[in-house]
Image (cartoon, rainbow, N blue to C red):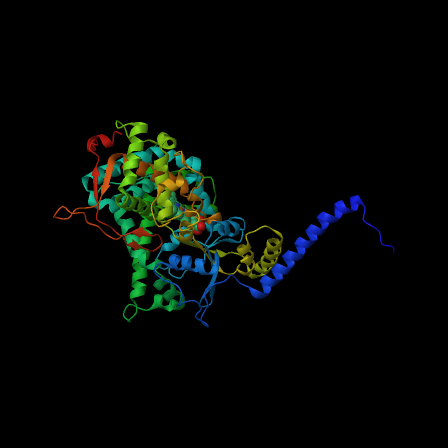
Length: 539
Ligand code: HEM
């Protein structure tokens, strides 16, 4: 066939076709190279059989994972005994996997210490399935954005009550914060009004929180995972302590689930017009169902109610403890916030929710509190797919990733559908490119040069990702805002003084577990000169 020059219209077609062909070739070559040379996300070298048991810090694993990020990249692969782990250190990877592929990554891994210690009532640990879905739906109906707004009067009243408690007994600030979050949840969920001191319901809750603490330690998780028979050793044999420890915690759990629930039921029966609460609302809804759905609904309601309590108690109080620590360490911050509050709303009344848009610096303090010390630094999810489906998803994800603009690191996702996925919220909060001097408390990082709020909001990562994302985030945001705004308007935060009148300096220590919070530190919290205790409750 004689050679002929392509026509002008042929050239118009040839150029885009060649570009597409070259791009496909480039992607194929790259994906082959990746498959050959880098079959898994990079990570520390494992020991035979034991895996990376030697490489990670047990106390604060998120810090170790953040160090790994610097060495191996945003997505890190590790192995502990037979279990594979993938650690997501960046918000974009977490969004790519946990949000865009939430149909895969929404399960929770089996943790051997959860059920024996009675923690199974917390649906945050529940595997993906019908019971979890029902719990989540019940929870969502009460705590979604518009419903959560109905709790604002309660949040405002309770925030003012903690100021009175702080003025009365400032050294007990940590206990006042726990009372604050407990009072909110007990009222919203069970219509129970907490008494300021020696409350019987708080006694039960504290009993369970204390007794169940060992269940959240790596030691118990691993011990019971490897030697489940420890839970069956009779009392008269050595080694039965773990069984007794778990049993005691389980008994507290039963009390914690049943006592406030029965209280709410009695309140409903004894009143013509019961106050709205999560339990009263759902007991009414439940009546229209027949058995067996009604029993399932009842069980899910008890668990959703207990979870509301467990999930909010420590997160809210720990956030307030972090806020207090930040104020004591950075007096210029509370002074600037007080100046903003005084100039915007004056000194004759206390902040209310309607003032929120006019107080950008207070808002920036809340954002920085959430970012600076995330109270849930690490979350874990598992793939919920059966092996057969996993295979399909691997192939599908791989093909899709090769042809899409997904971040390069998430293309490894094809290999990890059977692994446990850790989301390292801590690493996201320590992203130096986004948050220079990330270890420092600097609310100004959320303000423009004109003092307006910028677009960066850490609630995009501190509440987790995908289908397991915190469903209490609207309630958490509102209660923390009003507590912080009210404290800034009414209190000064200083270092404590020793007998000689010298400042007591200290180095903050943190306590880990399901949530991370500072150990009690010495400080001097006092009312501002124009604040009178008697007027605080009146606002
Ligand atoms: C500072 C406050 C809070 C923070 C930082 C926080 C953060 C989180 C995070 C990171 C998760 C895990 C998400 C995941 O696995 O991807 C979570 C789960 C959860 N949170 Fe929160 N939370 C807070 C307050 C609350 C409050 C006040 C409530 C209840 C009113 C609540 C209810 C829950 C529940 C029920 C879950 C389990 C969700 C599930 O597994 O389906 N949280 N939270």
